[in-house]
Length: 141
Image (cartoon, rainbow, N blue to C red; front, side, top):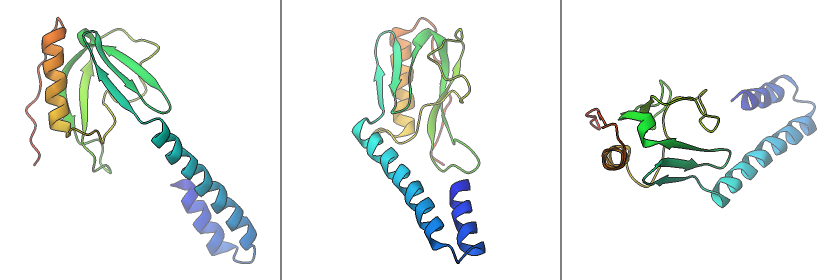
């Protein structure tokens, strides 16, 4: 967002030097295009198995054991976000593979709806984990 604001400021306050704006715009949109292509080349995957779940994303991967999570629920994401995500409470020991600086939630936009994914993960945890799930009741409203 800051880059876009900078480009707009350059266009507004320095209309004589169009080459700078063109180069900065080309770099910005070129890098953005490469990120999108990289994401399509290596899409995010979520694997559920007897040990836990693993998220493989373009920039990082992490794994969580079923016994380290409780309370799967659907989260709105944030005040500016329209995407709903599956969130959970992490009760395990900190591990190097877990991005602890981020909220305990999965990325948005899977092929299942957040409610369906939450229910699937709760069933997997109840089947394979030793601690039972306390899933919140969420609605689409």
